[in-house]
Image 1: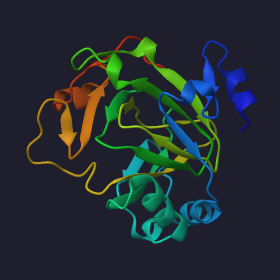
Image 2: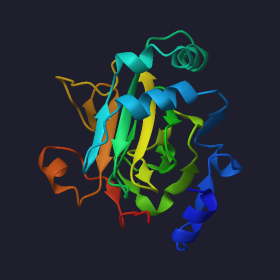
Image 3: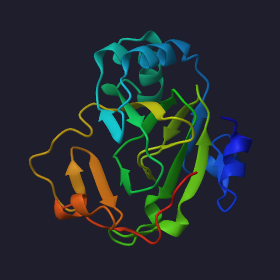
Image 4: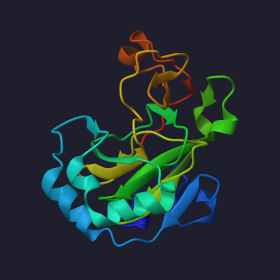
Length: 213
């Protein structure tokens, strides 16, 4: 789906392109030929019938040469994991950040909703400060460690992204503290996410929930 069509379907929201200057505070867009990654993901990553699915590491993805190249180029020789995030999300239900950048490869078009860690007050963030960005299929996007982000929003039948992070991120952690819920995963959720709140996740994403049409 074209950027202009997504903007037209959401007339009450300002949706930028990641190619715009508005994205500069949040990350960087790189040019790589990721056709092999897209084809592999579409053939091997299962799309759930409902909800969303995240797999932190996927051996097949990590062995693709361009994924190894991106990892070396953008993480400077550190150990990197590559996994997949896929599903049917249409709203910003939480915000997370990591120590170190996250790199996403867009297998489909999608919208990502971003914030700045600097705008957090303690563990709280006012949702109206968030900004929306359209990511086009095939784009490789780095999100800085200071960028709040969460599950992408679909603009067609589903969304799918490949996610590169420092190895060990998002795996279970036996000593969670504050908003650190997994290894190198600092998470707050919208108060409407009662199941996660009851499980102990901090309800720090405040204001009306942002939804994408």
